[in-house]
Image (cartoon, rainbow, N blue to C red):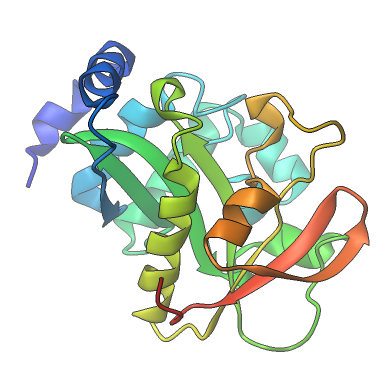
Length: 218
Protein backbone atom coordinates (compact mmCIF):
# COMPACT_ATOMS: atom_id res chain seq x y z
CA UNK A 1 0.00 0.00 0.00
CA UNK A 2 1.32 3.42 -0.92
CA UNK A 3 1.99 6.15 1.63
CA UNK A 4 -0.56 8.97 1.29
CA UNK A 5 2.05 11.65 1.82
CA UNK A 6 3.99 10.23 -1.12
CA UNK A 7 0.86 10.27 -3.26
CA UNK A 8 0.20 13.95 -2.57
CA UNK A 9 3.54 14.99 -3.99
CA UNK A 10 3.65 12.55 -6.88
CA UNK A 11 4.42 14.27 -10.18
CA UNK A 12 2.76 13.46 -13.52
CA UNK A 13 4.20 10.16 -14.73
CA UNK A 14 4.15 10.55 -18.53
CA UNK A 15 7.96 10.24 -18.93
CA UNK A 16 7.93 7.11 -16.76
CA UNK A 17 5.03 5.70 -18.76
CA UNK A 18 6.93 6.23 -22.01
CA UNK A 19 9.92 4.40 -20.56
CA UNK A 20 7.72 1.55 -19.33
CA UNK A 21 5.94 1.31 -22.71
CA UNK A 22 9.26 1.23 -24.58
CA UNK A 23 10.68 -1.44 -22.30
CA UNK A 24 7.61 -3.66 -22.72
CA UNK A 25 7.02 -2.97 -26.40
CA UNK A 26 8.55 -6.15 -27.76
CA UNK A 27 7.44 -8.53 -25.02
CA UNK A 28 3.71 -7.99 -24.76
CA UNK A 29 1.95 -5.75 -22.30
CA UNK A 30 1.51 -7.14 -18.80
CA UNK A 31 -1.27 -5.34 -16.96
CA UNK A 32 -2.72 -5.49 -13.48
CA UNK A 33 -6.13 -4.07 -12.57
CA UNK A 34 -7.15 -2.50 -9.29
CA UNK A 35 -10.27 -0.66 -8.06
CA UNK A 36 -9.88 3.05 -7.35
CA UNK A 37 -9.81 3.28 -3.55
CA UNK A 38 -8.53 6.10 -1.30
CA UNK A 39 -5.02 4.66 -1.09
CA UNK A 40 -4.82 4.69 -4.91
CA UNK A 41 -6.03 8.27 -5.35
CA UNK A 42 -2.48 9.48 -6.05
CA UNK A 43 -2.24 7.04 -8.95
CA UNK A 44 -5.53 8.33 -10.38
CA UNK A 45 -4.27 11.92 -10.13
CA UNK A 46 -0.97 11.00 -11.77
CA UNK A 47 -2.77 9.31 -14.67
CA UNK A 48 -5.27 12.13 -15.24
CA UNK A 49 -2.70 14.91 -14.87
CA UNK A 50 -3.32 18.62 -14.48
CA UNK A 51 -6.17 18.62 -17.04
CA UNK A 52 -8.15 15.99 -15.20
CA UNK A 53 -7.86 13.73 -18.28
CA UNK A 54 -9.60 16.26 -20.53
CA UNK A 55 -10.96 19.76 -19.91
CA UNK A 56 -11.12 19.45 -16.13
CA UNK A 57 -13.58 16.56 -16.31
CA UNK A 58 -12.13 14.20 -13.67
CA UNK A 59 -14.68 11.65 -14.93
CA UNK A 60 -17.61 13.53 -13.40
CA UNK A 61 -19.50 14.44 -16.59
CA UNK A 62 -22.08 11.65 -16.38
CA UNK A 63 -22.56 12.01 -12.62
CA UNK A 64 -23.57 15.69 -12.61
CA UNK A 65 -26.03 17.99 -14.30
CA UNK A 66 -24.54 20.04 -17.12
CA UNK A 67 -24.53 23.22 -15.01
CA UNK A 68 -22.92 21.45 -12.04
CA UNK A 69 -20.27 20.01 -14.31
CA UNK A 70 -19.47 23.34 -15.95
CA UNK A 71 -19.20 25.11 -12.59
CA UNK A 72 -16.92 22.41 -11.26
CA UNK A 73 -14.53 22.07 -14.21
CA UNK A 74 -11.05 21.55 -12.81
CA UNK A 75 -10.67 21.65 -9.06
CA UNK A 76 -14.38 21.36 -8.34
CA UNK A 77 -14.81 18.15 -10.32
CA UNK A 78 -11.58 16.78 -8.88
CA UNK A 79 -12.88 17.42 -5.35
CA UNK A 80 -16.22 15.83 -6.20
CA UNK A 81 -14.55 12.67 -7.46
CA UNK A 82 -12.23 12.54 -4.46
CA UNK A 83 -15.22 12.87 -2.13
CA UNK A 84 -16.83 9.85 -3.80
CA UNK A 85 -13.69 7.80 -3.38
CA UNK A 86 -13.05 8.93 0.20
CA UNK A 87 -16.68 8.09 0.98
CA UNK A 88 -16.12 4.45 0.03
CA UNK A 89 -17.53 4.37 -3.50
CA UNK A 90 -15.42 2.67 -6.18
CA UNK A 91 -16.05 4.66 -9.39
CA UNK A 92 -13.89 2.55 -11.66
CA UNK A 93 -10.86 0.41 -12.39
CA UNK A 94 -7.21 1.41 -12.86
CA UNK A 95 -4.81 -0.49 -15.13
CA UNK A 96 -1.13 -0.72 -14.13
CA UNK A 97 1.94 -1.60 -16.18
CA UNK A 98 5.13 -2.24 -14.21
CA UNK A 99 3.56 -0.51 -11.22
CA UNK A 100 2.60 2.63 -13.13
CA UNK A 101 -1.06 3.68 -13.64
CA UNK A 102 -1.67 3.60 -17.40
CA UNK A 103 -5.43 3.28 -17.89
CA UNK A 104 -8.85 3.95 -16.41
CA UNK A 105 -12.37 2.61 -16.95
CA UNK A 106 -15.39 4.12 -15.20
CA UNK A 107 -17.99 1.51 -14.27
CA UNK A 108 -20.90 1.69 -11.82
CA UNK A 109 -24.60 0.88 -11.55
CA UNK A 110 -26.44 2.82 -14.26
CA UNK A 111 -28.41 4.88 -11.76
CA UNK A 112 -25.17 6.49 -10.56
CA UNK A 113 -24.96 8.29 -13.90
CA UNK A 114 -27.82 10.77 -13.99
CA UNK A 115 -26.80 12.08 -17.40
CA UNK A 116 -27.71 8.73 -18.97
CA UNK A 117 -31.31 8.98 -17.78
CA UNK A 118 -31.56 12.54 -19.10
CA UNK A 119 -30.23 11.63 -22.54
CA UNK A 120 -32.58 10.93 -25.45
CA UNK A 121 -29.97 8.65 -27.02
CA UNK A 122 -28.64 6.90 -23.90
CA UNK A 123 -31.77 6.69 -21.74
CA UNK A 124 -32.43 3.26 -20.18
CA UNK A 125 -33.72 0.64 -22.59
CA UNK A 126 -35.62 -1.19 -19.88
CA UNK A 127 -35.84 -1.60 -16.12
CA UNK A 128 -33.13 -4.26 -15.83
CA UNK A 129 -30.47 -3.37 -13.22
CA UNK A 130 -27.45 -3.02 -15.49
CA UNK A 131 -24.05 -1.55 -14.71
CA UNK A 132 -22.69 1.05 -17.15
CA UNK A 133 -19.25 1.73 -18.61
CA UNK A 134 -19.12 5.42 -19.52
CA UNK A 135 -15.48 6.46 -19.84
CA UNK A 136 -11.95 5.35 -20.64
CA UNK A 137 -8.67 7.16 -20.31
CA UNK A 138 -5.40 5.55 -21.39
CA UNK A 139 -1.97 7.16 -21.14
CA UNK A 140 -0.72 8.15 -24.58
CA UNK A 141 2.19 5.66 -24.80
CA UNK A 142 -0.24 2.79 -24.14
CA UNK A 143 -2.98 3.64 -26.63
CA UNK A 144 -3.83 1.23 -29.46
CA UNK A 145 -2.37 -1.66 -27.52
CA UNK A 146 -5.59 -3.33 -26.38
CA UNK A 147 -5.72 -1.67 -22.96
CA UNK A 148 -9.37 -0.61 -23.31
CA UNK A 149 -10.49 -4.14 -24.15
CA UNK A 150 -8.69 -5.56 -21.14
CA UNK A 151 -10.05 -2.81 -18.91
CA UNK A 152 -13.54 -3.75 -20.10
CA UNK A 153 -13.01 -7.36 -19.11
CA UNK A 154 -11.70 -6.28 -15.72
CA UNK A 155 -14.70 -3.97 -15.27
CA UNK A 156 -17.08 -6.84 -16.03
CA UNK A 157 -15.31 -9.04 -13.48
CA UNK A 158 -15.51 -6.24 -10.89
CA UNK A 159 -19.22 -5.68 -11.54
CA UNK A 160 -19.97 -9.40 -11.42
CA UNK A 161 -18.25 -9.63 -8.06
CA UNK A 162 -20.71 -7.04 -6.75
CA UNK A 163 -23.80 -8.81 -8.04
CA UNK A 164 -24.13 -7.31 -11.52
CA UNK A 165 -25.63 -9.59 -14.15
CA UNK A 166 -25.27 -7.27 -17.17
CA UNK A 167 -22.83 -4.53 -18.14
CA UNK A 168 -23.81 -1.91 -20.70
CA UNK A 169 -21.67 0.40 -22.83
CA UNK A 170 -22.15 3.31 -25.24
CA UNK A 171 -19.20 3.33 -27.66
CA UNK A 172 -18.69 5.90 -30.39
CA UNK A 173 -18.91 4.68 -33.98
CA UNK A 174 -16.30 6.53 -36.09
CA UNK A 175 -17.68 8.17 -39.21
CA UNK A 176 -14.58 7.48 -41.31
CA UNK A 177 -12.70 4.60 -39.80
CA UNK A 178 -10.90 6.48 -37.05
CA UNK A 179 -11.28 9.55 -34.86
CA UNK A 180 -9.18 11.71 -32.53
CA UNK A 181 -8.64 10.05 -29.17
CA UNK A 182 -10.40 12.88 -27.34
CA UNK A 183 -13.71 11.94 -29.02
CA UNK A 184 -13.40 8.24 -28.23
CA UNK A 185 -13.57 8.52 -24.46
CA UNK A 186 -16.62 6.23 -24.30
CA UNK A 187 -14.74 3.55 -26.18
CA UNK A 188 -14.97 2.11 -29.69
CA UNK A 189 -17.39 -0.62 -30.84
CA UNK A 190 -14.48 -2.84 -31.90
CA UNK A 191 -13.05 -2.94 -28.36
CA UNK A 192 -16.46 -3.75 -26.88
CA UNK A 193 -17.02 -6.51 -29.46
CA UNK A 194 -13.65 -8.10 -28.66
CA UNK A 195 -14.56 -8.01 -24.97
CA UNK A 196 -17.76 -9.97 -25.62
CA UNK A 197 -20.36 -7.18 -25.92
CA UNK A 198 -23.21 -7.26 -28.45
CA UNK A 199 -25.27 -4.39 -29.83
CA UNK A 200 -28.81 -4.29 -28.44
CA UNK A 201 -30.04 -0.89 -29.64
CA UNK A 202 -29.03 2.16 -31.67
CA UNK A 203 -30.89 5.45 -31.38
CA UNK A 204 -28.16 7.41 -33.12
CA UNK A 205 -25.99 6.37 -36.10
CA UNK A 206 -22.77 6.94 -34.15
CA UNK A 207 -23.89 5.63 -30.74
CA UNK A 208 -24.75 1.93 -30.41
CA UNK A 209 -25.81 0.58 -27.03
CA UNK A 210 -24.07 -2.70 -26.25
CA UNK A 211 -24.41 -5.25 -23.48
CA UNK A 212 -22.55 -8.21 -22.04
CA UNK A 213 -23.43 -10.66 -19.33
CA UNK A 214 -20.88 -9.74 -16.70
CA UNK A 215 -20.16 -13.33 -15.74
CA UNK A 216 -19.20 -14.46 -19.25
CA UNK A 217 -15.76 -16.07 -19.30
CA UNK A 218 -13.19 -15.04 -21.88
